[in-house]
Length: 220
View: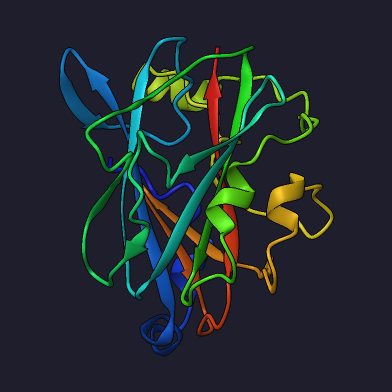
């Protein structure tokens, strides 16, 4: 029997609404013996695993990716010298983060790295990459312990943490300082549809300014 999407409710949205929406499609990939393979976004990873993200959007914009690691450190993953400086994205085109052929290595204490994806349909004022990449006071991280979902483990033989993967940023969530200071950024309620290894983050209304969502990466 085929598995149902983990978040099936958003599929009930009216088709007319989906047709008018803007969306981001993102896939997490792990390097296995030199080959990149799409993985479940909830897969609990091991130290040293190499990752990258593959994504596309239905609208033109500018992308910034920031990692709040389990050590409390905040790092601008993209754009950066070693991951690519051109953060302009065009509708329908597939991109990789990092865009340079490099990869991210899983490290730090066990828990959930929270990777913030900030996407804006218009250029951000000033030099946002410099501000987001500046040294920050360590950001407090929650004590999120990776846990295997027993039902998924039995069915697929994998350690899947169902609390990992793409998530909305809660209105009360304490964001790292450099992110919370981005002008006109909204934490609007986004619809997230999970279809096997592919995640789709949907804004039912047209974006006029920067929006943010988070991707939780669980690891030992």
